[in-house]
Image (cartoon, rainbow, N blue to C red; front, side, top):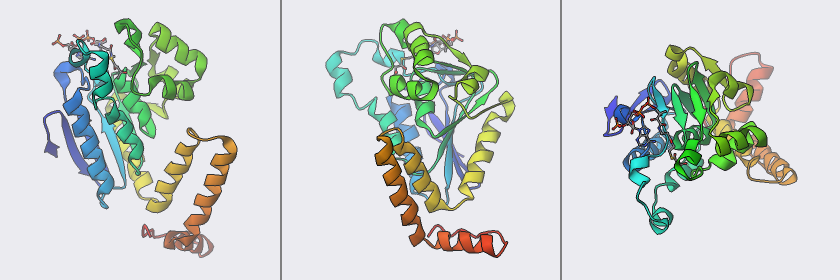
Length: 258
Ligand code: CAA
């Protein structure tokens, strides 16, 4: 376990875990915290010993949003020039799977951080929301776009225009999260899921993530054509030969990541 000022990190098997650690501020995300989170994820992404990652908070809060105290007096020019919101974009460049393990409050920039991950495991008491309208602003780190794609226009409108919160069960029903588990099992379940994915063919996992993400960025025909190229590309890997041979020989495949 390594301790930075605002996060804790550890490697659990082949899973890199980042825990946001600002309990006194409900894990509100200020510049130094986002910088530490992104640097840790980028280091895990570059580490061959890590196959997947988990971001979590504590039982009270995954993260209660961007740090309001940090932003309260900012001018438009300061906000436009600030690297702050750009930290959320850096998640898009992470090539390995990232799973959010969410207990407690998951609000504003915290929900935007969770939604920028690839999957979300929620604890039973988790509350999801974009309450920025209560502060006289709107979500600024992808919330209007990712939430709408996740839960659809009508629920996103209600959450963003009227600060509606979703319970964990509602988040599951509307497709925001993958599963809901008891609070004490949330991190363990996310790590278990990440471990399962990390045990699969690493290069194919990376390509699969790229292909699914392309569905958010491209028109259908373009996405399908990208998928076909990526699918064909995988036939140049040793893992494709191994995976198909193992199926035919009725044995377990041994992945090399090559
Ligand atoms: N920024 C800074 N500090 C925060 C914070 C935030 N987003 N959320 C909580 N805190 C701080 C509180 O100020 C308080 O600090 P003090 O003890 O020094 O006063 C401490 O965390 C504990 O919070 P509360 O006393 O408010 O705890 P609570 O249990 O009564 O309420 C809560 C919990 C419902 C999460 C409430 O704190 C809250 O509503 N927080 C703000 C949520 C919010 O508006 N998030 C959106 C932020 S803007 C954004 O994220 C923009 C974007 O899109 C990038």
